[in-house]
Image (cartoon, rainbow, N blue to C red; front, side, top):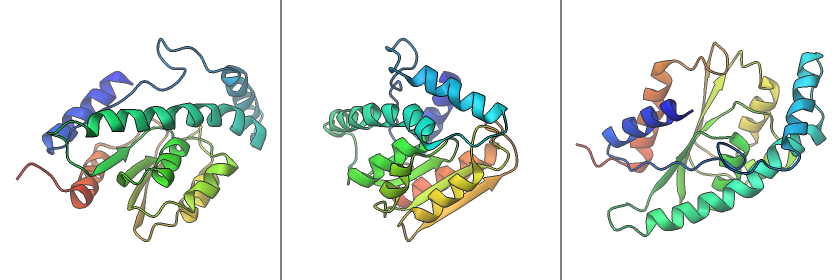
Length: 197
């Protein structure tokens, strides 16, 4: 993840944006989230058997991450936005789509979001999507083996935003084409402005 994040941060900086990322709960050297490894194993077992994972498996895998990550992102925004050189408009890009959805639903500082439909979606996320009204740029890899395409399309439909765009590309989870990042950069420049002339 780090090389991709550095590349994205440098690209954002070249566009005139400040960029910040935080380590996801349970990732890297952080303490593993209780029950998540078992939920991940249950998800893989269901997918390998050709079954759709149950809602309980999705909730056990995704919700602990969302419940911990969203407050951490809000604390991060508090710290970053206190800096005088940082503007007021915030864009959120990437991450687990359930996390970005909740953050966009509850934090009015988020002015636009670029979300990656690359994970399963808890039922509560569908409800939270109905509260999201900011401009959205949603990327979907059509052949993503770890994503339920129908669920991703249902989530996109659930967003209450009057300006939302779904970008679907052929390929798997890590096959995002270079131009998809360029499209996202134009989206953020349009909605957040840019310090670069």
